[in-house]
Length: 301
Image (tube, rainbow, N blue to C red):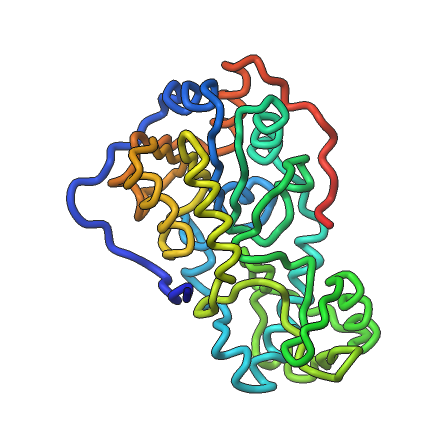
């Protein structure tokens, strides 16, 4: 399956009215068996911007596609220079109230699983277990030639050594860990090869235009089948990689509940769309259910 490089969509038909009423979300969670599907919007309160919200990065930035990354060394130099700088910001990010609430719901047996479109590791850092990273993780790298997997932290050290003094000022940060830099700022950046075969290293994430691994998709489909309802948190559902699970849940008659400030591509399948900020909304639901947001959040691995 291919994740189409769809960057935007135009709503059609009558929009689903937004609400600030959390009762339906609370009712679904109190019944248990809720599958969480999260997007970039849940991490904005941790300092990681989203793509499509107000001031989202798509207004100034086109994400790297798999085709561009594999096409030539110049594109890879640009990506790794920008990503290397952006990784520092990712490394400082900590889970917010939204991540901690999802983890608390899981500890109390209300959540059957978490599928995230994010690559920041913040759900796990908050304490959520068995998170399916639909689009992979920035904490890992993989060689496109020999398949060797490695740690992003180890690669960051190698890049620091190869690019002493590299410390440009970025115009902004993006949800994929890519900092906004000019071509002039990245022109002399040295890219590190695979230590095993000398091949091309790629972050272990699904770029726009790249296939989501079929086994991972099937795991998510099974989680939807097993769930009693689907709770979408902070995703516009613009790309099919997440929207297909909303459609699957709707086809099987399972309630779909969305917490997102802006309209989403899945609204017509939803029972409700709550427009409150995610951290406040989920903390409010936790308070209503008498669930403390305990546990000490850890930095992402």
